[in-house]
Length: 347
Ligand SMILES: [Fe+2]
Image 1 (spheres, protein in one colour):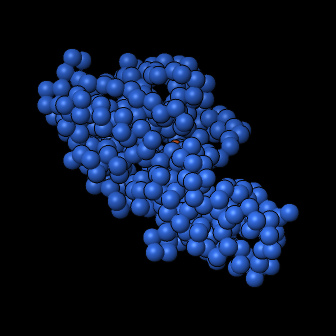
Image 2 (cartoon, protein in one colour):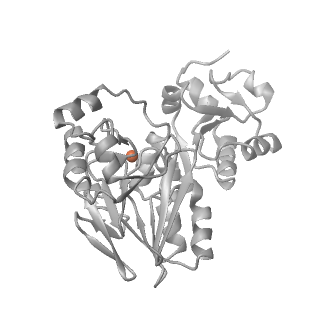
Image 3 (cartoon, rainbow, N blue to C red):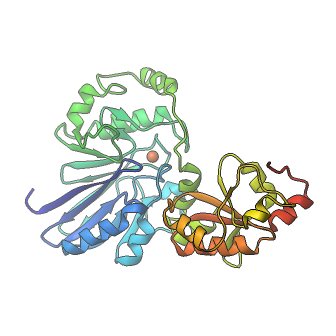
């Protein structure tokens, strides 16, 4: 495969594989399942290799990470493509089963493989199949959310993927054990869930008995990815936005106590003073203290800022956005409003 370029790239937080493929006669390229955190790395690589990125392909709407599609699209001429069943309106190409995307002198073929989600696509290119979360290495994607269906996943794998030649190389969206690829022939034989001629009933039973935890970033990733990972959408998707600053109401903050970081940006005197503070809140005073604190933090952490009336916490939210935070918001009305509503206070 001298005239083909193939890169398997890895994002460690979500154990996601991103793939870069190209036809080297024309240098036309496609990227599959890019991740937000690694967009800069991917763009640098595309430039270094002198590739023309034509497509950004998503195997499905991911629940465990935010897509890099929107950021990559902004910086290249590439078109985004995802299954038509996602009903997303911010993509360029809505894919149907069997759709051919020309890549230079070669073709990428989209194969609908629903089951993990209803809108999963696999992509076939030059003897390789990129299976997303449908078929994994000695495993399969989960089927317990996002309209997942063990029955559909069984049909997709058996009828569509297992009908590919045995030597077809399989590249999934994840592997949690450090494995990088497999083949259709190996999975037919060795996949413990669906290999060895398992019946649909056996597969469904196995999938039903599996215990899963909810992906950490799912409540952020799903709405963000439905907006193609657009930064503007990510910033404003959860709370309502008041003059461009994500803002939440006291009642909503109250409901989130214990599940979200709350930073009180007042002075220590005020924090321990008359108006009190929210039980789980942490004191980091607006100014150099807060800036230093935020500079060292995780840009993907959800934080709500609180102050006396909502003014300083708005500044804190602005500061966090300036530093690249994506899920921070301002509690409107501050502790004044909190007390007016008789919401419980901490010691
Ligand atoms: Fe997934």
